[in-house]
Length: 368
Image 1 (tube, helix red, strand yellow):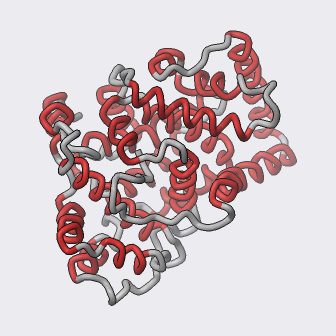
Image 2 (cartoon, rainbow, N blue to C red):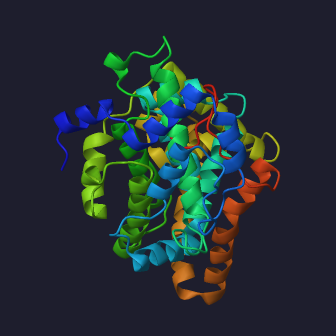
């Protein structure tokens, strides 16, 4: 278990490998050229482009292989879990994980500096695409497309670190290094451990094996995103203990978090037909993350809609029991889980793959 002192030290650690690449690109002014080349680099099996600066090619070669401890059976198990429960995972990612990222003061400051507030759909689309690539068949092998996604995301994080630390508005002494090791680890826990907890809050049970598989694939992704392997818990139980130390009680209100939350809620409400059901969106957020955290980011509170969503949770638990005993019900839910994230990503991006580009200014960051 990481001590509080060690976690505080991680606030001042970035990602030396990716940071050195970005420092070179910022110095030489080659970001636009690199982005043009990387825009065509999408598949794990693709040959690394030759027409890149040597430092970028070296980085892509060095980060091309997943860690030796990757367990292919657990990765396959995570995909099976996602195929079975993808609709519920998508709900918790959208209504819970995104908002919990905003309920942390320093990450909310980073996201405000890098996130186009009038385009919250972009970050949701990028996150959806990240998860879809991770949960596809063979995500780390030749048949997948997840490795380039990770490599580009890691460079984007490094670019944000560079630009914020070189801007007069960022106080490294008070706020630490932007997108630091601690915040990357916290985001990983939000998108993995806390998603499992959120599923329980909306009435969906997750087995120990499913939780272990889901954590494993996120742990592999975390290592490839530049999180130090010596701070990555090995098991779901250990990750859950770290979640309690790092995140439980660590959420806090901020103007940036409130504004980001308002923007994402407005986006979700646009998906709900008409205006009569607008209250269901904040009620779903509150059901997923709890009232205490929801209050910190001013999620609207409607007791009536809270009761409606609570009734829906009870119905979902009953439907889940039916799924366990009814092949037709199971087939329907499995199909829904398989298409929900793909549908949302296509709606948000016009049917095209979400481009990941290294920002030349403080404009965008795909993961919290």
